[in-house]
Length: 79
Image (cartoon, rainbow, N blue to C red; front, side, top):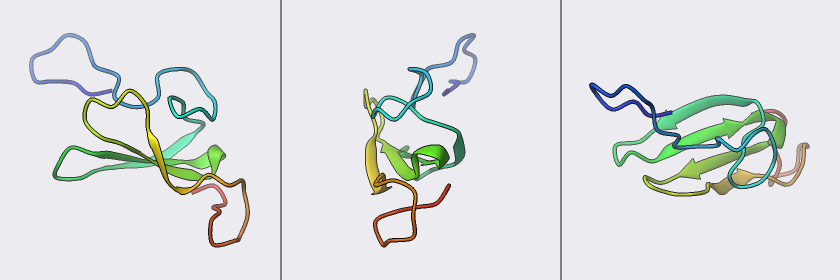
């Protein structure tokens, strides 16, 4: 959620469509980071991936992992 100063309601900026593995969903998000451009990065732990949401995006993009749990170069184990 994003809360603009003075607002009474937040705005969903990532996830918000229940638990799952679709590009509009997260499953046990374990951490987040917002860069200077306002892009949001989320460690999506149980989907074993890192997701990116640019401002105004309707869905995220997998930028790392997302190939199941494991130790290969294209996998994570609960990031």
